[in-house]
Image 1: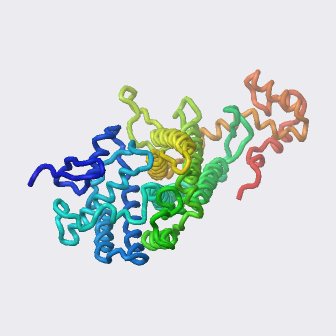
Image 2 (image 1 turned 180 degrees about the vertical axis):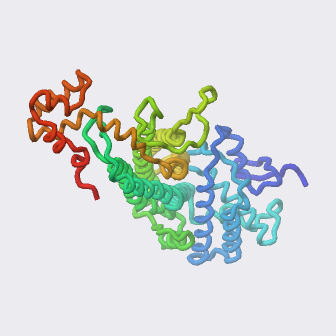
Image 3 (image 1 turned 90 degrees about the vertical axis):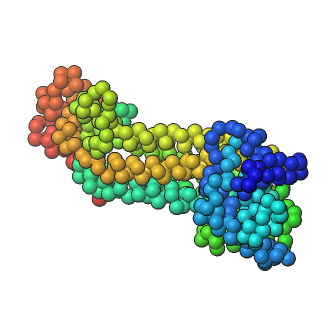
Length: 463
């Protein structure tokens, strides 16, 4: 067998490795875009296979497209979905902004494999052509369709379930810790008390609201551009194709996809992707806040706050024996930083739709899919290797609470703000307790102080 074969496209002949299903346009992209090592995400490839299968089946129903070709295309797509041909999709993210070369990569691979399925040899005859696979489509509507499908799939199946897992653990911890009264902190300074459970309930609610925002964004992501073809007019599609192909994709994937209400918007702007990227960024911001708070609360173990203990997963230093670090918090905050950066790129890319086409599609797809994957994976890791093992350090919590000057706030309504401030400032200056100074200044006796300044009574209603 020859090492190479000759393939042709509108620019002429080109050598293609003989053991590959791809053709001339894929090969030209390999040679013209040797930029980085970020390959087109597998989620995009799988989504393309689904939409190509759906399109072939709808073309069979709505046009005179031969049944045997449609079925062969569908079979080839099923093989791609099973992972059989993963090595046939070598193109990088950094290619044409419309994703045309990835569309053609799929067309060529599917066509040549479909030719084999029909009993032919694609090296000598094309029983199914790339144009057959691309019938009723354009790169301009297939890539945004694949982008939406891949995003919906990963967010629903990976991101949200793993965020939910962390949320549920935080809710559980909140209930466990609800009676653990501790000092609060604002401006990084001592504040009035709350319970550790109340503190954790805030973290859980952040994730709850973030998931709600993400789910709302998915309502726009489920709209598919397919059927708009080149500029949104639907040129070269049969009547009813856009609705029928969206219904077919929904049937094949079991996701509630619908055709985009306005194909011009769906091709020239990717605001839905910007929106869901923003929702993922919101989760990242929440996760950054949660992870930072947890590692600060666990800081120490002896010379800092140390109110909670984290699981010891691995040695923390190559030079300091016995050191253990909050590594899961560190990983989660790095992921959060990456997602926030990804969103910035998506926002810039989304703002650059020119006339009838946004040509930043691959970077939008890459960044959103990476963000969705990272958030999901990081939440599960943080949950399994950190949060489930968090325990309160009661001795430290009680010690810090007993020393808090801001317990004096409970006296405001009894002796007034200025007298309460005088007690706190005097106690701080003298290194004494609030109780001692309240009695010494003659504002309260010891029994009155103990009745009023009770941390457990200061945390509000505990459910």
